Image (tube, rainbow, N blue to C red; front, top):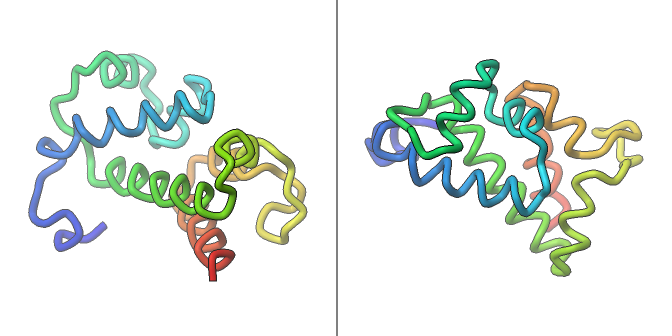
Length: 129
């Protein structure tokens, strides 16, 4: 995410709202703690639990970018699959598209690499055309 996309706002300004939105998404997708940590790019469980409890002092630009991609993925899935249960199930369903190679989207997304979130977002956006 570039400075322009954030409108000059800092990770401290956006951290709380971004994480609250992420945790809502995590509940909807029934994500485990480990899956959530991987998606956020976190290795510290105590840091994760602090964020989950609302104790956010500042969030890195990397984390904000990850959350932004996840929200785009969520939006795209729900446009492509308007039935919410079906859209949520898609995340864990094995997919034979080349990008997934038989894995689920969630499996690919929890590799820990931001590039996987970017690829899945691009894939879903292309499906909407």
